[in-house]
Image: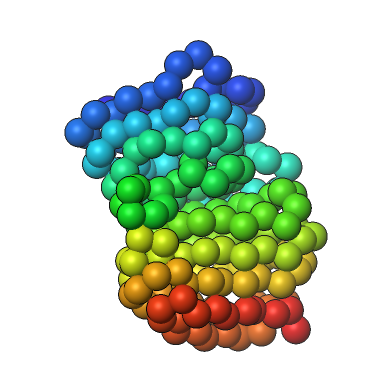
Length: 195
C-alpha cells in the first residue's frame, strides 16, 4: 500500500492510516510542507520517501512532519526530509520494536531542547538541529545500531544508549563538527561537540 502526498499543508487531518500486516509506504514531495497529525498503524514497518530524497531541507519545515504519536511497529526507512515533532511518532521501547534506517534527513527543527527516543539507529544520512542542545536516546528496546552519517546544527548533540545492546556512532568532520566516534553499550552516554 502506498500513500502519496504532493501538496503542502496539513495532510493528516482526515483519518488515520492502517497498513495492517503490509509494509507501509508514504511518498511526499520535497520542498513542500506536509504535516501528518493522525495515527499510523501496522505491524510490518514504514518507508518514508521524498521525491528528491536525501536533499537537506532549508529548515522551514519543508518535508514530512510527523506531528502525532503512532502505533505502528517494525523498521522505519527514512529516504527524505522527515521532522519527528513528537516522541512516539517513530517506534521506540520494548512495546514498539523497530529500528530506524536513516538515509535521508532526520530534522529536529526548532523544537527547543528536544529529546528524541528511538530504538536502534542505522544509516548514513543527516541529523539536523537548529539552535538548541539535543539528546537522542537510542536502543530503547535493547537494539544494536550503527550510524555513520553526518550532523548539521548549531549546538551540542548528546547520544544516550538505553538498555542492553550496542550503538555505534561515527561522524566525519564536515567543517563544523569534530570528527567523532562512539561505541555505547548498556546505558552509556556520548556527546558530540562543534569545533
